[in-house]
Amino acid sequence: MGVPAAKIEPQPRISARVKVRPKAQLTLPEEIRRALHISEGDEVEFAVHDDGTITVRGYVSIPTDQAWFFTPQWLAGEREADEDIAAGRGTVHESADDMFAHLDALRAADPDADV
Image (tube, rainbow, N blue to C red):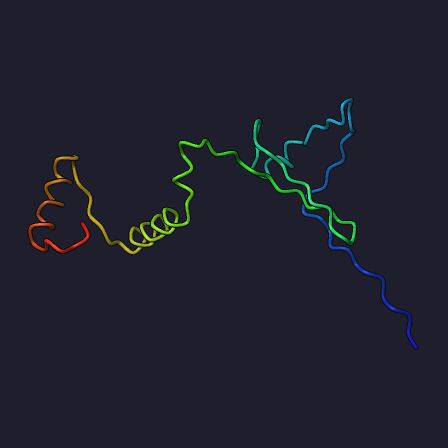
């Protein structure tokens, strides 16, 4: 009977070593902060798994007055708009007045349309 193969750990894309300072503080190197997409004031989550690995995730804090932008409904609308723009659907206007005139014309042509 053969000997089981040792578990091969994947090589990390980025690796860094830091020293724990007083009050259990540490400074994350720039390349780690970039990989986590975090900056000063953001949060970091550490999760310890049963196999001993630790996952680190960066969180960007969102001001409460901007949280509406991150609702699933709003983000779905943003994705739809991005797809429309990428597909060339839409119009460009020279001014806000031109845009509103265009919307008024669309509404007059089809009063039941969601304009």
